[in-house]
Length: 222
Image 1: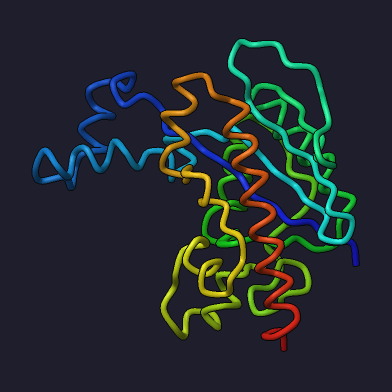
Image 2 (image 1 turned 60 degrees about the horizontal axis):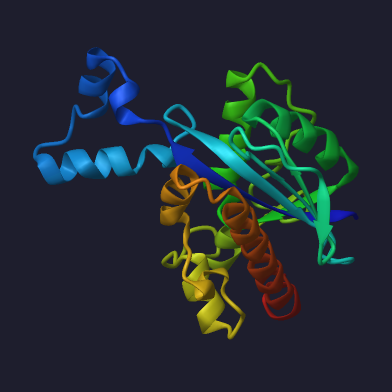
């Protein structure tokens, strides 16, 4: 079966750009200023209040990949670096390219893909009026169509969840966070127009996820 590791990076929309009624709705359960700021800082977590700025794909066998990312208004020619092809476009364009590319694979590998990446990809595609080319979720209790490593490493919720960085350090795998960037920083990096930094961070996430998959495949797969 042809496999591919998937990962996305997202940013939240500008809270101040929402109309007053929408702002009130989003802050409905925030009881103080701290909680209001938390709501604003978490807009990137939801496909109705955020968007995708990078989509990464990595073939675990060849170690070659495809990184699609938004580049603001800047022009960036398609290029390849260390086996990864980088290509830019608007959110709609990178989603269209993603759904066209993912058709070539039988199985996807993610970290928390069922709880985040795949629903986000599907919802943002619908919002952009893009028809998905396949169901990337598959049967939850099977790793054949979709191996969500967070599901596997918690035995489907039987034990506590940890983040990718913690699993990587526990299993002595190089963490994508070792270079000082994590997902919470993506929004600020995008505002600073550091688009390529976001793309390369996504590549590191792919590689860490792939190494974690190899560890699981060798020692924990059943």
